[in-house]
Image (cartoon, rainbow, N blue to C red):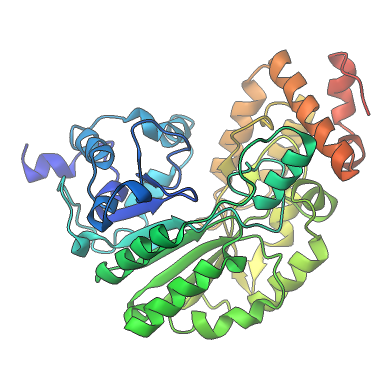
Length: 405
């Protein structure tokens, strides 16, 4: 196959060819959206530092892309693209401002060198101060603790990289001399000590001046301004806030988060946002329990320091399926979204496609009962109530003979 043919690959993704992705439990992935519990994967503890960038699992992924195949372990992106929604793969390939593919030149090597690594995405652990309804215990220590107390989780409450694994990961950062971008996830990365270790290492080595840091945060931290001194040492800082609703809807989903605290941090943070060095965006997980509130959230945070806030609407995975809501709620959500401009910052088309697909999908009774059962368990434990937060769910409970609480 010629270089011209390779450049015309339809299913190519840059991430396996210039990045490293490591989960909270040390799993070496092809990207942070590849899913959990994948078969035939390797762990940090199983390899040396070179094994972080070259191992049979990632070689298989690279070979698949070079054959222009849709690898089954990338199903989340394929599903988004089939829906007409921009996928994580397309974001990585097309948006040079993410610094994921800074040169615009595709890499086609099966075996990488450390100099090839431009991007590292790292889940620091599951240390988190929130227990969000659509989250998992492996991504939130607080949710893990609550689920253990509820008797529905038997795994570890605290997931963290061992000292040995952490040293390998830090060595990867040292060796990746052409590193341009770091994406840190949690848990909540801003309360994880490893977040500071990585930043301090890169500041000390002088790499920071060439690196963009990008992280998801729930903004439920104390004194957001205390992070600014370190951030200033980096080329750019992209802050993506995980916010799934406003007001009561937010507090219901992101328990025990407080909307007032989040909004206070948001207003404080907005003072430094300039779209030159400091950038801000919001990434809501679109689900049945916030479909009615999404328009309000967009309006609430539409502008940050006079600049249009970027939104990236993430499809739900788990019991809170978007179609498990009265059709009229989805219709109203779509009508509201048509009031918004379709811009690069607010991809109205993406959210409308998700809402439309959910509207067309029939309700599966077993899925609906599972949603209500899970929700009831959380409500009783947290002293919350779905029907008070979103009364329209009473319609579904009545229609399908589900007992309300």
